[in-house]
Length: 308
Image (cartoon, rainbow, N blue to C red):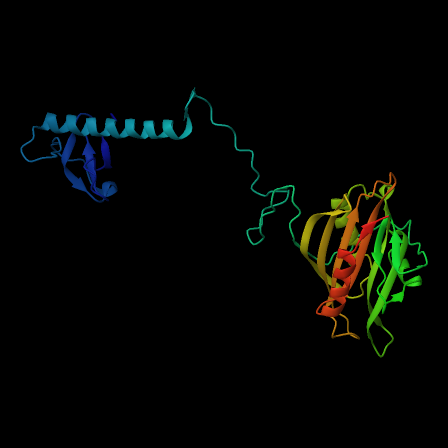
């Protein structure tokens, strides 16, 4: 600082200015440097009573140099120092207007895959499912057979014939239905239990993922009129006569104007690797939410399920 003029007071008084004549500071200060003339006899400013002018000037200069050094060290620490030495600060390439997905703080984080299927709510989006199956096989005797699985026949249920064509991604199904409600408009709400097969060529390659696919198809492919959503309740590995499988239980919700008393169904899907190179065995059932009797019958069928 060599040019004479008014400068912010080095003593740190806010809003005050002190005159620098090129060699020393004035004792006089001002709050209006633009309207103040240079002092007639500049004196070194005093930071303490009785200090010599040259000492006072040196102290001010030292204080200014120390402040500059401190600021330089701060900039160095913030931008250039790391544990391995010096490096240039990387360029910030982040856009002020991101074009990709943005984290929504109102949404829960997506969990990392853990190897265990956790129950999770599912929205009401419809899915596309295979349509290469849909065949129904007549029932004979007191058991249902399909896809290498066997379950007991429920005595007070009807044999399903054309109804199961609504599951066109399945093959060789044997099924029973039980009417729960009938509306004045002719809409029928029924429960179902069935066994059959799903083809590996359609993407049903192993039990766990196939159970999820089967549930999505059963819940959202159009089988349920008025479908509004789904919530998974149970997801676990099962063993059927030494054959490995996966069980998924979900609640499927509906809103139907002509059947307002119906909230939806409890659905069970069990997919089993029975050893067939081309298909997996599958059990599927539905029971009206709150219908304890039907749920008990379905649990009976599941507990007595076997392979053969």
